[in-house]
Length: 190
Figure 1 (cartoon, rainbow, N blue to C red):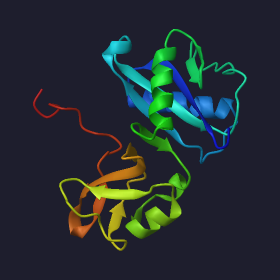
Figure 2: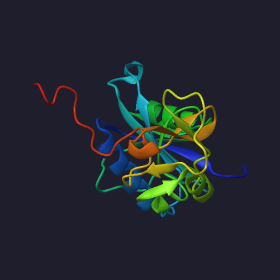
Figure 3: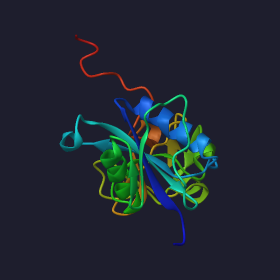
Figure 4: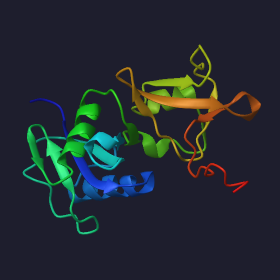
């Protein structure tokens, strides 16, 4: 097989920060480079309790998931091989990533350069992101439109493309639709 294989991992993460920690921990344990494409995936209730699994593009066969001391009991799936009680969630994450049909992309080539304010053209030319869409807009933004990143750029797989969903921002700029620390619903009137 040419190209990367997709490894799914699942430790039953309940929050996005927990899942991102798992993703980074496994990538480090496998010695994967920083530009490795890694995603989070929502696992629906049909496979147990709803939670978040992860996927990583690995350059070749993996003998087994090495011990990850910070995250015990990690289930995994790679091609037809599976291990652990949450292997179905890991397999779902791997399939979604492999088919580029779903998943929130956390790590990818060029991610570290997307800080501050960058143009859409620089974002597309300097990272693995293939498309930018502005919510509620029928047209994609021009290459000269500025993106206020807040250092938090999490594209998603949409229509087989790594797509940054953005929203309008002040001054004719745009910003990623996912913000780093969202205010919980009802926080101002609980």
